Length: 164
Image (cartoon, rainbow, N blue to C red; front, side, top):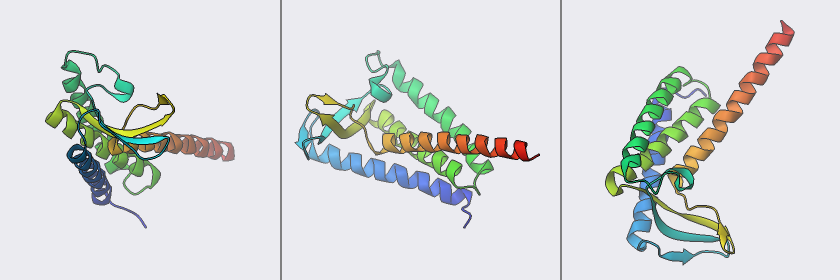
């Protein structure tokens, strides 16, 4: 079954919707800094990250908000072109769609709140992974799939070269 560009864009839209819906639920249930303990290693929290992954550039004066919005627009434009080119494949367009959906979800937060809403917090005792959200998860899975697709493509090209 071959998917078309519209299906892949639909997947990106679904990621945006799920991301924004989960953030809406958390924003309605918690105040900034409030914590709901779910297990000994997982909490739901409400945090606002004005930076990027791992709060990179979060302590800057606000310029980073527009830098990350611009960067997301450039990356999404590039990935949309790649998505159109590879729409009949599986792994690469899946990766592109996840990244696009995640990026758009976080850009919406930057416009509305000036920062990204994070709420998933995994930890062991006092040591934890920085809080993240559905959009961040989609981006991470998408990047991982892109890397896997590139390794598979490189291995396939090397095999074809040996056969020639």
